[in-house]
Amino acid sequence: MPEPIIVVEHLTKRVQDSTGTLTILHDIDFTLQAQRSVAIVGASGSGKSTLLAIIAGLDTPSEGTVRLAGIDLFAIDEDARAAVRSARLGFVFQSFQLLGNLNALENVMLPLELQGRSDARAQATEMLRHVGLGERLRHYPRVLSGGEQQRVALARAFVVRPALLLADEPTGSLDFATGETVMELMFELNRETGTTLVLVTHDPAIAARCDEQLHIEAGRIAAPALASLAALRAEASAVGSGASPARISS
Image (cartoon, rainbow, N blue to C red; front, side):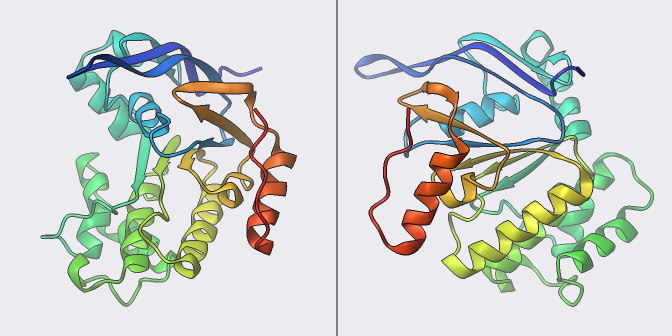
């Protein structure tokens, strides 16, 4: 079997606050094979976004290791981690994180330019057309709707064909219908590019579309570590029908 693209071992994160030591993540272990998708599911404050940030090398653990495509992220310095992110990762955030002084085309060109790509403009233009924004290339974020801004963010994430895409509540700032459209586009792009997807969400319907689910409760992986796909789909169906959803089995 090929080496997993993500290996997380004994990951713990502690911070100090006015009351003492707060443990955000407790001894997390999991692996993910390439070209798979996993939803990190949990309530607000459960630690799922912190876990995603550590997987990206944007935050550091108190204990434990994260290996990305065989690279131990915390055995290298920040410059080296930044190089790994540039070469291998794409990001989609709830708040879009577009640069307001750049238009849609320039936002999508940016990661390509950072890689020194001479075809940045052509590739960015093609990707924006692919997400349905071919007529909005010169528009700035302030004049784009929320759904359009998230489509620009998706184009920016996928244009470099990353080995791994990390998405943190990508529909959290969108209405239901727009969020559905954005998620359909994200999964379509994921299939087309063969990217590994790690998706943070509290939405069981979105989680049920992923290959695997990692359920986090109070900073710990719930048992079993990978939540039942059938249970998630049952909860998603209950939410869609208006029924009171059952709690995901732990």
